[in-house]
Length: 98
Image 1 (spheres, rainbow, N blue to C red):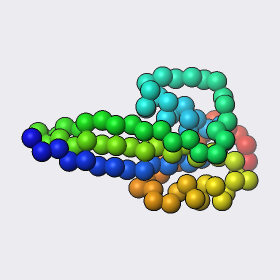
Image 2: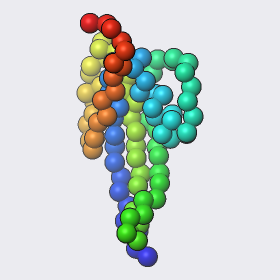
Image 3: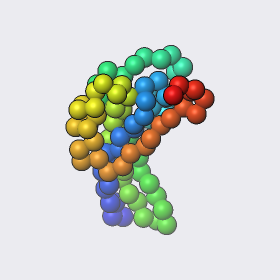
């Protein structure tokens, strides 16, 4: 059977300490760690899987970019967005900071 391949670059964006890295770890490694360690710069993780729908098989390769949330590093953030196919905006609705 013929298998298509789809590659996508997805960036997780949001303020620092909202859970971007935790979401990636849960999706890619199926683990949860509640220790906070700030992402410095950009961390890239890959997730590959086979999607089967109506006997059509598609091999999916996600390149997931964890982009640090500190507002002081806008230039690094903008360069990370180049070539992205999508974004996931992460926020913490319990954080009462202005």
